[in-house]
Image 1 (spheres, rainbow, N blue to C red):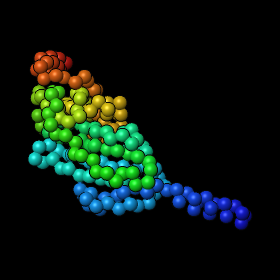
Image 2 (image 1 turned 45 degrees about the horizontal axis):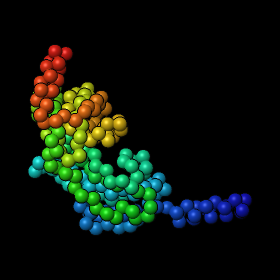
Image 3 (image 1 turned 30 degrees about the vertical axis):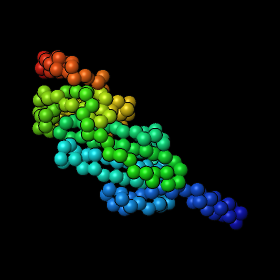
Length: 208
């Protein structure tokens, strides 16, 4: 019995010694951070710079923390930008997840808000989304390279998205909420967007 107890205590001490250390922020913009010992459930460090909202109402935040690998939807040790843009609401993140001590000390640049030449159909407002009257166009920004359409029990959602989210249904659900049905499409060029938008809206009106 004493031998078993000794082995358990030794293993517990070794496990604690091998626990990951990550930087965590002490304020919203993470101008200061501390290295902390992560809980056993956290096997990765994460640093993320986020933009939520559009135009002058957009908020930028920086976060560094201990994370589970399940929460890291991006490849390890690779800076990845992902974004969902409804026009009246945008959420974009630049993120790195890594698995060595204090590997998340760097602060990533804010995701770009520059127009990139892609155009997608969109809802002009949240009221239009709820009413299903989505006849606007949206100029994609930053890394957004694909259009998407989605629907929930209460509204329609159209806009721009980064293609790296198209294969991650859970991430899209988290981003646009309410268990939507999502379809990602090819990126549109400015030159043909008006023609394609007219066609899509015509078909939509016929179907309803």
